[in-house]
Image (cartoon, rainbow, N blue to C red; front, side, top):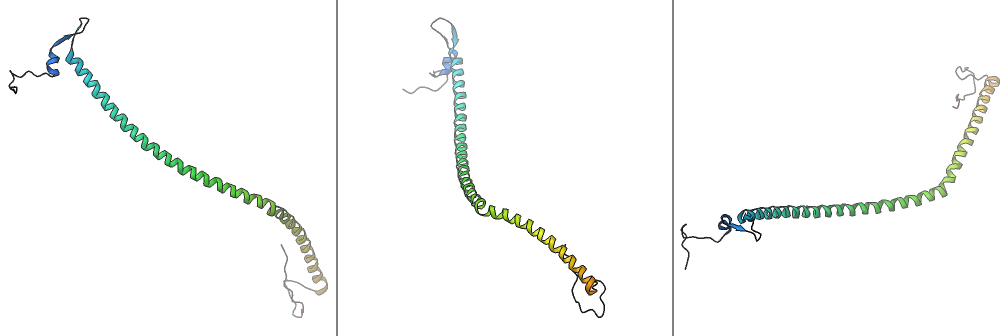
Length: 157
């Protein structure tokens, strides 16, 4: 037989009835079962929402972890590339020091010798100009009309 849904005949068997009813524990302390059930239900809802938030945080952390792993892989590849480049540069430097280094030292030595030789050449050039002044009546600024000597004056630096 179907229950009559009018208020006076309806007797629900839910926790709303239990909330009004006083229940005692085995040791005899009275408490309201409905309040306890409501508190437990609130705590369960809180724990459920906290669990959902933690699940969302875990999902975001997993995504972040994947991003970090991808970035780490890129950095490891870059490190490998740079280490290979450093190795090639070291090989080149060893070859340079072995083959070109002695030539560079001799080049500096040759430059010093050329500087000494060029200084001596300047002195001899100056002596040559004095010789032209004395024996050929040469004057770089003033030329005589009957000069047969047609040199251009030049003094090295």
